[in-house]
View 1: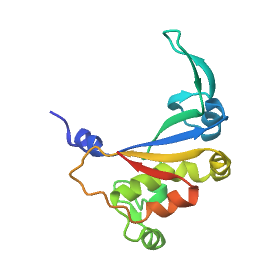
View 2: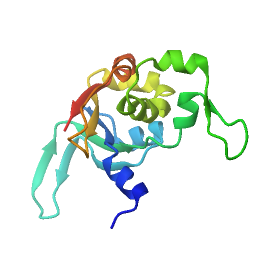
View 3: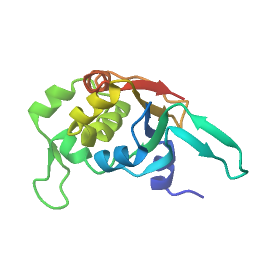
Length: 161
């Protein structure tokens, strides 16, 4: 039987960043973003394990975005004393407005990408960037109120599976 923490983890959506580009090397994307890819293919000629020759028209890079490390910073939480619940600042509360838990998860995952805005802009010249959202629990309604603006600011499309 799953513990409550495992059940909560299993309902958390998975977020992936997918980049397609006609000529950038996947290793350059990995280095610039500081995220190891789950899958990467370089544009150009390639040979499969079975010896089949093929040509990839574009580089493909797919990396998982984690949404745990920066949640406290994103929400502006500060702990008054050890063991005491974190306090949400008024500024952050107003900034988040009517953010849903899914918004917060997405905003948290995008936190590290915000610093890479210039690199993302360069990638969009000729390429495409998408946030792939894989929902674990389809019974929970999909409602996004605040994260779409950040995605648009970074030039990242949203694809939902």
